[in-house]
Image 1 (cartoon, helix red, strand yellow):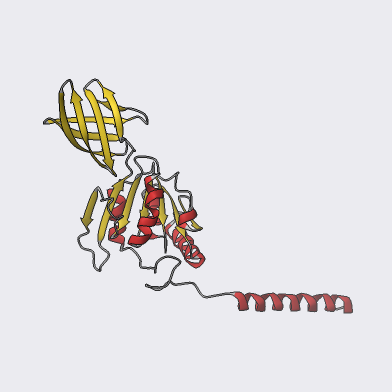
Image 2 (cartoon, rainbow, N blue to C red; image 1 turned 120 degrees about the vertical axis):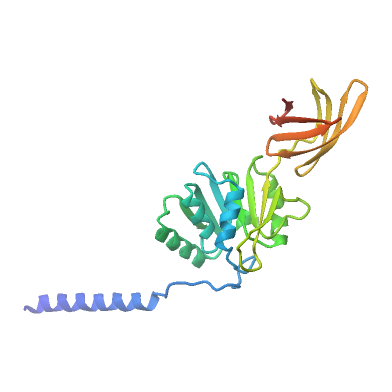
Length: 257
């Protein structure tokens, strides 16, 4: 071997050894989260899989949906939604949890439909979601509530255990066969903002609104009767004078059928 070839081989060996040593120093073991570990806004406690399934069942998630999970943790809700054919995005502040979620999605074979980003959920645009899922604390839910109520009417929201103050859920259900403390699924549909006065063939309708609950009056001629009803997305139903009315809100006007 010539001196030049010897020097080249020696340099190549040293470079390979240095690279291997550097990689060994920077490599870290596979991250495994621990229940109760601190996060930005909440500690991490995983939602039991049976509750994940119930939340997605309540929201009637299909392949047509875009699900956003707020505080996505190890990615199980996003991955479950993706297995149902939906596109799903997890919002998680802890970058190690994001990396773990991506590995879990790859192992589940759903990387084409399941994505995860490291982001602050309060600063994230939620407007493209058809379904929002979350397992956050009550004060965080209340802080998020104005943003959620501002979403497109009909957007579906499912929460594990914790409510949103006086915005009562449309459905609340204890999950059978669930072990532990976090075994209640809550579900809301974002209501259209329908409060106002409307002139209709059926009479003059005055609607007052507290979240999805409706009150007010219906006046036809000299007769005024109180109403009681609900709004689910754009759909309206109320009773007045012993009769049930169904209709929808088109963004400007109530249309009764």
